[in-house]
Amino acid sequence: MRGWVAATLVTFLIFVVHVPAQAGIADQVGATFGLMLQDVVSAFPPVEGVVVQVAGDHLYMDLSKKQGLLLGQEFLVFRKAGEFRHPFNGKVLGRYEEILGYAQVQRVEEGFSEALFVPVEGKDRPKPEDGVRITRGRIKVAVAPPTDLTSNKADLRRVAFMLALAMDQTKRFLSVDPGHVSEILLNSKTRSEELLVRPDRAVALGKPLEVTGWLVPVLLERRGVTYLDVTWVSAVTGTALFSRRMAITRADGAGEQRFPWEPRPED
Image (tube, rainbow, N blue to C red; front, side):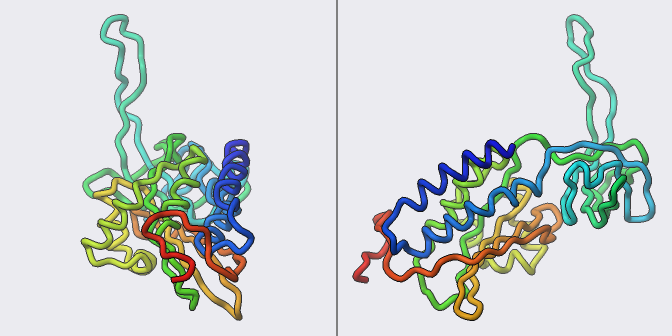
């Protein structure tokens, strides 16, 4: 996976940074996010384990720091059911699974981890020997339009597309069309930043998009320095699972013209 991310970072930086020296904010945001990609991918290691104990709303897993577990990670909790076989030769091909809910990691130790159990309505409670995993498949994500809390007043309309492209190129994520994401938010009269503080909105709007999470980018200004802050919000529970922040270089001039709807430099 690190090889994929390294190759993606090189490709993405070439794509984004190959602009005039006085690049626009949008390009700088894209390049800055390219430097965050490894952290984003590392938050979703493809691992599988079992429940070893259940205590109230918490469960304990046989996964630990050795498997790269981090606080805030979200696991699927499942129970294996009956086998299914090949119709002709009778060979066992696999087992059915029942999805019980989700587990959000709250403590990571050397030999185990503790997580808060979030049930799926109508399903059984977990018990020892049930399975937990972060899928090895591509994780479906919605990249929200960026929120600009700075005084730059830059045109950031293509930033969501750039970030979605970067996520896709890691081969770990599958991004929904940012245009469709913007349409869903617009129709529901929801601003991107509301996803950070309104768990009900993050969950409800994630369902029609069929995503696991939201990537919410925000531009901040602190003491004359512009920062890119990206937060992953669970589309299952609405919880903000992790956030990364990095300073970007402020634009001194207009950026390269990229799309017909972007303003001309003299505008």
